[in-house]
Each structure stands twice: as C-alpha cells, then as structure tokens.
Length: 265
Image 1 (cartoon, rainbow, N blue to C red):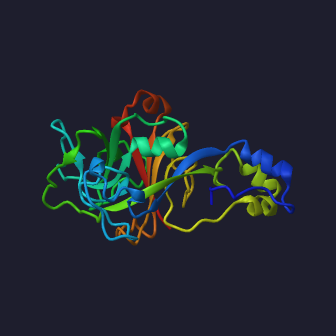
Image 2 (image 1 turned 180 degrees about the vertical axis):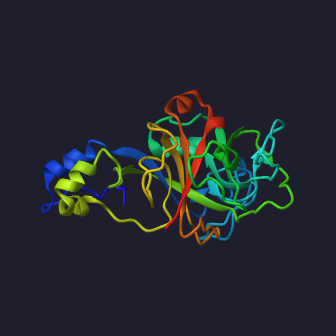
C-alpha cells in the first residue's frame, strides 16, 4: 500500500518514517461521488443521478469514470493500428484535479479523456507496439460536447468522482526503498497504511501488483485505474491500468505520447 497513514505514532521508528517520507509524492485519490455537489450544475453540462448515488449524466463535464466522450470540432476518435475504436475509461477535469492537488500540475481549463482497448486489452508488456492500445485526448472544457460513440466499442456507466489529495510513498518493490525493507521489514510494514479498493489515483507513486513496470526510468504515473465493480471493470485478474508520461511531456502539456501498462494478480 503506497498511501501514507495519518502520521507516525509512538510505536513507530521516527528515523525510519523520515527516511520513507523523504520520497513521498502528492497524488489525487478519485472516489465515487454523487457528483460532489455538481449534479445539477448547468456549467458541467448535465444532471446527475439520484441523490446519494454516483451515476452521472452522460455529458457531465466534471471528473468521472466511463460515460460518453466529450470532444470538439477537431476531435477524432482514437483507434488501434488495425482500426478498432478504443473505449473511454476516465475523464479528468484538470481544474478539479489541480484544486485538489493544490497546484497547477495539469493544463488549466481542459478535460483529459483517457482511452484504452478494453476489448482486446493489449499493453501487458513494454512493447514498441503498446502505444496503440492507449490514448489521452485533451479537449477544451468550455466547449466540449458529447460525441457519437463508434459501433462495437465497449462502454461503461458514467460515475462521478471526487478528488482528495493524499501523499504516497514508494511501493516496497521500488529501488529507492528496497534497502530499508531489507534492513527493517517489520518496521517498514508498520509504517505503510491500508486503503480500500478501488484505488484510482492521479500522480503519486503507483500501486504495483507485480514488479515495477515503467516504460522508461523517470516516467511518472499520470493515472492509475483500478478494477471497479461499479463500472464493471476487471482488468485481467483484479488488475490495474497505469498511464505513464515523461516529465518533459507533462510540463509541455504533450499528452499524445502517454504510454500504458496493465498488471494483474
């Protein structure tokens, strides 16, 4: 578990805690929400589902899982090299993510739509052909409108999400903390928090299921998408999707080079 507990307590090794926290990275945890107060906001383009629920209207412009894609006049539905249309997995409202994170890490005033080949589920290894299975499309939030979904595309219910800032620390398989785990495994285990699935997160340290699987050293996880019973997602055997971005591409707002990896149990 890579999300940090509330803090060190009397039984913890404070020096060990400090050593781990030196590598902490902020992230935004996405949880199902009744549109976090936006269910009837015309500014967000739709009316969400029943009070207390997390389903939201298909044209909802806020952060959500699934639903229909929003686009503009230049939008082209992403496809694999063979022409199969990809599925919309997550839509991020960058302003909402930035507000939760406390800094403008993502472009202001835009939506990021995360696509994946949910039919064939390619991208299990870092292969040169893998980028075809993944795509991230940037759309102006103020002008985005629902676009027609191609036939045969796997679709998922729209589920509104609320974002909450959490600190993450490296998984025990990460090289930066392996020496600490080797020297003090019991102490390290005591420091790591526990959180319930699904663990959908923007930025931070990834929650790996297998060994670390970055496309390249230094890549940042842009989005981690867990298996989720509400949306009907099952990535292999209770697996996760990881969308990776190079630091320089993130700074430049260049999301066309995002790459992905799938892991499962």
